[in-house]
Length: 386
Ligand code: SMG
Ligand code: MG
Image (tube, rainbow, N blue to C red; front, side, top):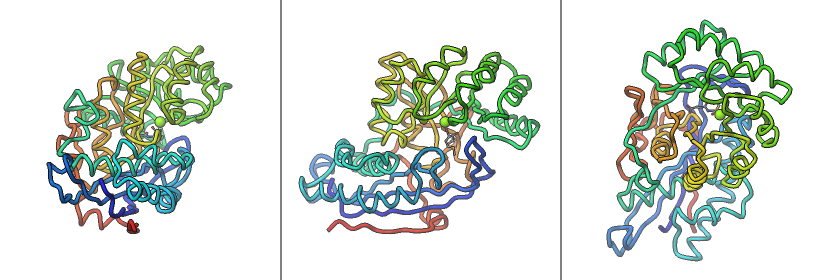
C-alpha cells in the first residue's frame, strides 16, 4: 500500500479498579494509537487500478512510565513521529509502497522501540487486510474460533480482598486465574486462593522480575500449590539465572519480559531458562514476529500463551486472533474489555463461558467508536507524507 499519512493519537482511559503489580499501581491506561491511511491498488484492491483508500489501526502497548520495560508512551510517540513514520514514508517514496511483511526491515535501522514498531506494523497490517477482506486470524493461521480467557489479578490490600476479587472472576467463568506476586505477597495469598477455590482452579503467578536467586527457598514453597507456571521471577536480562532457578523448582518457569525477539526465545529454550513462553506482540515488535516466536516454540515443544498489556479493544481483538494459533495451548491474558474498562473504545470484547470469540471481520474485525474515541482522546497529531 501507499501511505498518505499517519495519525498518532493518545488516549487516557480510566481503569475500573487500580491494577497493582510488583512495580507499581496503575489507575488509568494511557495508550498511543496509530491510524495509517493510504491506498491499495491491483489485486489487494480487488483489481481496482486507481487505488482504493484504506485505513488501519495499531495500538502501542508501552505503558505511561518505563516500569514494565524501558519503553513508555511519550517516548513511543516521539520515536514514531520523528523516526519510524518518516522511515516508512521514505520507503513508499523509494519503492512505491510498503507491505506489513516489510515494515520490520524498513524500521530495522532504529534500535529497540519494539512496542512503537509493533504498533506501526499492526496498523499497516490492519489496513492491508481490510483492503483484501482478510481477518487477522486467518492471516496469522488461527485454528480456533474462540480462545480460553484468563484473567490477571493485581496485588490486593489484603488476602480477604484478594479472595473476594478472585471469587468474582471465578463466578464470571474465567478459565484461568493469574495472581501478581512480589516479595511479601506470595506464599500466603497463593495458599489462600488455592485453599478457597480448590485444586481444579487453573492458577499461575507473575512476579514481573521482582525476585533474585537468593529467594529460591520462598519460590520453591510455591511448588506445593500446583501452579501452571511461575512467570518472570528474575531480572529480564538474566537467562542464566532463570536456568539455574528452573533446576530448583517443580513449578515450570515461564518468561515474559525476557523474550524480546525470536533470538531471545531461541536462547531461553536452548539454555533451559524456561519451559513456557508468554508471547506479547508489542514486546517482540509486532504480530508477525510474535507468530515467528510461536512457530519456534511449537517446533521445540514449548507451550505458549498470549500475554496482555491492558489493551483497548483494538489490541485485544488482535490478541484473540494470535491466541487462536495452534501452539497457544494455555489460556492467555485475553480477558473481556470489562476486566479493565467500563467503556472500551471499540465494541466490547466479551468473555462468555470462559471463552473470547476470535473476530472474523476484515483486519482486526473491530473499529473505534467515534464519539467514545474522542471522549478518551487527550492528543492527536497528523503526520503527512510529503
Ligand atoms: O491485559 O490482562 C491484561 C494484563 C495482563 O498482567 C498482565 N500484564 O506482566 O504480564 C504482565 C502484565 C504487564 C502489564 S502490568 C501493568
Ligand atoms: Mg508478565
